[in-house]
Length: 152
View 1 (cartoon, rainbow, N blue to C red):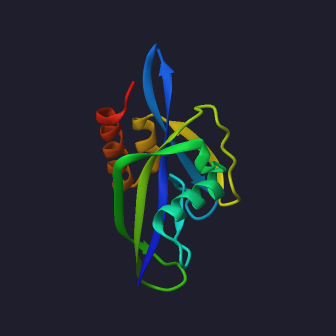
View 2: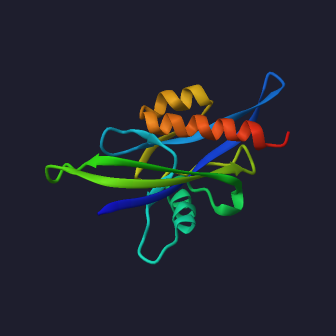
View 3: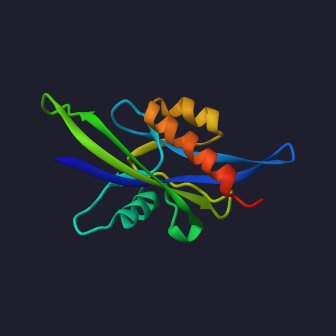
């Protein structure tokens, strides 16, 4: 059985030294090894993937779908094994991410109990925080996609 999760890579545009730049939102889990990740979560029965991504973003970061827009054309699926601490072995997991731009760069993030901290990070910092190579690759792909598709 494969666990399925969906989420959004939320970004905002910020002005740095008169140049527009991109920052990504990463949340730090309050459980396990306290890893950093975009908001995401498991698909509930009867729920479609995008509904899951929107629900999880609101639950985990307090950001409602009215506060961002989904960027057309970017969808990334990650597939990996998760070590299950309750029994010996691994579980397969599939996570789908879409890109979403925050409408108001000053919108307030409100964490759920599943997370203990959040950061808005430039690409290099976001990759450093994320630690996992597949997430680093995804953030890099998202950034390159945005450079080619965002209007000033």
